[in-house]
Length: 148
Image 1 (cartoon, rainbow, N blue to C red):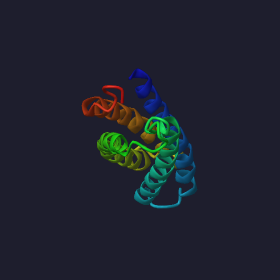
Image 2 (tube, rainbow, N blue to C red; image 1 turned 120 degrees about the vertical axis):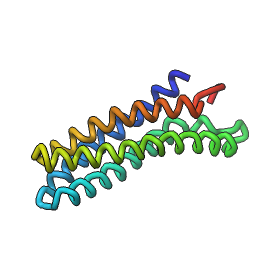
Image 3 (cartoon, one colour; image 1 turned 30 degrees about the vertical axis):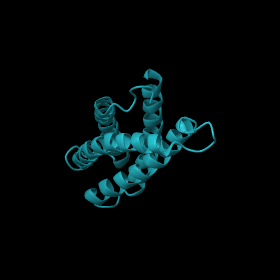
Image 4 (cartoon, rainbow, N blue to C red; image 1 turned 180 degrees about the vertical axis):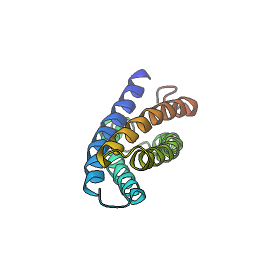
């Protein structure tokens, strides 16, 4: 069970690392856009990169977990676990999106950070909050209970 939490957190952190780097680059490339557009485009980029990397890593870590001895897929168990995972991530994503957008906009407009720095700082703070929410949600949803 602890190993499953560690794999999940590893995948989340690697995905966030990739999205932080790419988002910061995009934020700086779009420095001449209005602050709300820069923030919005950067947040969209963040999601595309994060979910692409996370999905790939999650698949690689769990592809054998749902295989039956016959070679088929245990679709019942897979659907059950995916519902719990998507619910947990969904709750955390809502919190993350609001916090990240507001913080980046604040850093751009009030603090006058460079766009890449506003992106990095807002995403860093939001990631910490996200990690807390997703781990709490996964625990409440009992994703990794009874050998899952």
